[in-house]
Image 1 (cartoon, helix red, strand yellow):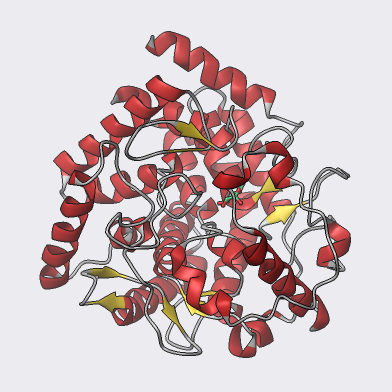
Image 2: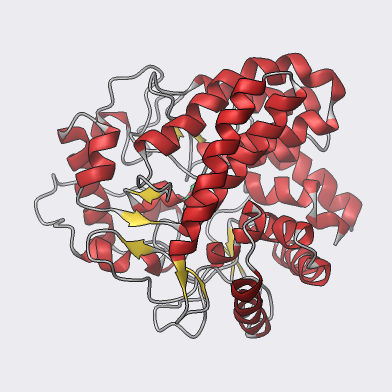
Length: 418
Ligand code: GLC
């Protein structure tokens, strides 16, 4: 069975390869997505190291002059996707969306280099782009203390998480230009964000376009600003990995700068500790309101290497409670939250790439049994349902798009050893 699934996973990755970049899945997501591509590199590394480096090279080559690697790079025309480049209105080449997505590319680059001694030249060529991206997060998309700010739900990678409900409700979506969604033509609408959410997503895009995608301004004064533990922890880890890679490549100045960013942001992350929820949680920077429940990314402090004994004991207790409440962990949202929905995208379903990050962090922090259980759950989901976009944590049913790149990548990199 494992050998069959290995072959299937490789075939999915090859099939989603569009020549140097990989789409998340055919039709539903026809371009290059930022963190999907980083995971694709991780997956390719299991069977084609050259292709793994290539994925990161094309991703980094889509960076803006200010260092941002966008959340989508529109590498080819596809009228079957909304919102396309004309809606975003970004004056960049290649055309792209106007905000970013979780920064895991530097972490994957460092993993590649550790596995491929012959990759030093390719890693060295990536270093300036990855360093500029780390700088962008800190200088243009963070609070002065270093908390990463989510300025559009799509930027978090967790599009319709309950973490955004409060802040999104305050966005006026009534005046947006009429549009036709494409996503609901590919996937059951019950598994996708609602129409009201979608109008507000587009209102935020229109706002960004209206201010010429001035990132610092959007971060400081835009209509949607939420400090996100997921982005913050992934940025801390990306900087730590960037520093390690820079040191290995003999670039001490890049390493020192990235280390300094990581240390100060790691200290700042304490402000996202929500004692009431027993987890690191998102916080609306406009109203001060906390998220309504625990998101799976609240446990990525382990991935970031951010530890504090008292908080960690409470955090692990929350983790264990949530993990035990589902047949398959880890749900993207705490099932006790009223907003939980086991089938709708980021409001409950399990996502393989998040499980990989969580388990990696747990293992590094010395929680091997929890990491192993998460790997076994991920393996069981894939064996049961195939390489789906996400999974129901109670029934194990596969949901969303099929033949998904990052699910295949996580299988090849890790889950098959479950
Ligand atoms: C959805 C997900 C996002 C992912 C994208 C492509 O928008 O929420 O995290 O990057 O699909 O797979």
